[in-house]
Length: 144
Image 1 (cartoon, rainbow, N blue to C red):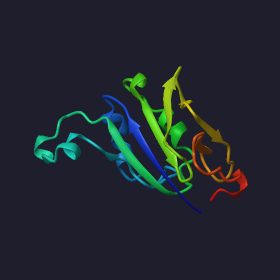
Image 2 (spheres, rainbow, N blue to C red; image 1 turned 120 degrees about the vertical axis):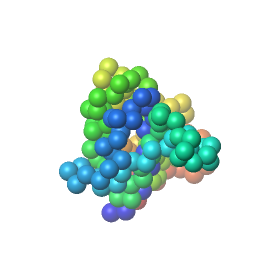
Image 3 (cartoon, one colour; image 1 turned 90 degrees about the horizontal axis):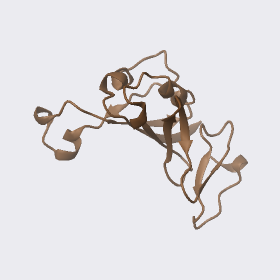
Image 4 (cartoon, rainbow, N blue to C red; image 1 turned 120 degrees about the horizontal axis):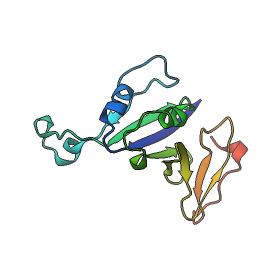
């Protein structure tokens, strides 16, 4: 089943935590790897001017294979859990959803004027729709 999703992880001081997710690992449910987005991506200065801190990583999934990702990220030994933000935009989402660690759990933060529609078996997180969208959302059974 084709189902695109983009995930962005923001976390201060987490280079060591995320390093293994930048490498291939057949033991994970997903086979894609995260890409570190450091200051060289923005400055254009090249690797010779790379700082020692990176706090953003991205990944794109082309199939619905990332079901364990959020719980996997939740269990990592984050040096600053208060800085962890996970942004997820699944194929039919109108915008990125936001997850943050509260009380040791990766929890979705409600965004104003949005609603999440559950879609078991079709989407890992359900479909996030904006209340001000111009067209009505498709019924959950027809998403895809």
